[in-house]
Length: 512
Image (cartoon, rainbow, N blue to C red; front, side):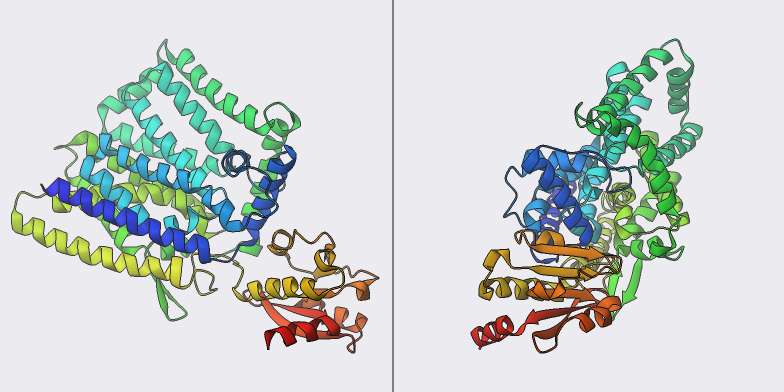
């Protein structure tokens, strides 16, 4: 009865998490990265052409997935339409956590899925049109396949692990961090559990080793080559995939996106930002409890406890590696956080599945308090402050005021003599994204960067520039012909919009 009740409550938490996820998808402003990814996916969908760029966005899986799930054409698709294509992946990662019941127990697995669904990481990044949710799902699936392979090695599991290894690398080049974390976790578990140790010796040193390792390699190579070669249409993409590590190693040391060593730790626990609290302290506390319980009771239930240790160490090693890298963004925590949730579910199950009814009731009450606290923290991040710079879960995010600028350009097109061919100039020193995606319906919208200013600037009905170029652009425009307004793009980044007076006057008249 206790298990049934625990699973029912977990299912309620999963449903609540999806509700907040849907609110975030529908309301949050498009991030620059989302707009760039959507543009690449649109090109593949509309033209059938995709070539991997070793100096640009990450691997091909996101774009091919979107091509299969969104459909064509994409001309009128909004960023929310692209975000919705990730819903099956979001469901899949929760299902994988539930299937972890094979290793942690059914109650623990459902509780782990509930923890993930109630986290801000899931609610935001499972609907964020970037690679993260696909990557996290593939890495966790690989960890499960590798564990099962270590428990009962055979060629089919070797092949499956290889395919998942290749797919995860074809999603994000940072997969090497996850592989290293997995290897370190296996090393510790092999030291703790004799059967794992003996199986790993057999995999690497027995007569079957060449066949097993060949299966892993074949599966990984097949996924890697098929995706990076664009299914045979761009063989240079395979070499570019290897070259990309020069770009990403350089990017890892970039001071432009540097944050302190405790950046990820604060996200995993709690922090106050702009008067509001954010964090995952309830889930992280349960995970630490689950890890300690696994260490203390390993002899009583060695397989469940050893897997809990394996999952926890996967998270610890990955977070430690990410913390040492100069380049930091919050979405990089999604993959290790899935492992944290699995161990948190194990901790929650250990609390409630007690024979003493009073201890069980006390544990259930404590879990209720933690769930309520987690709901409040996640709601701040995914709903209340979804596009607010105070939110530490979003990074260099588009502010809501930018939507007002897009609305203003749309209104200007209505009154321009050129209508949908209205000439619009974005002149910025900083990245103008997501503007190119949000204004893609205007064929005469142009974008200049690096301080370049077009010579024929006065032919444009709307001219937008960022703060570093505002003075230079202002000198080239006749103040008698343009009205000016200020809008936000990102935190501490203002845009000045120049709109021809006759068009501006008509817009204001209609608003009145």
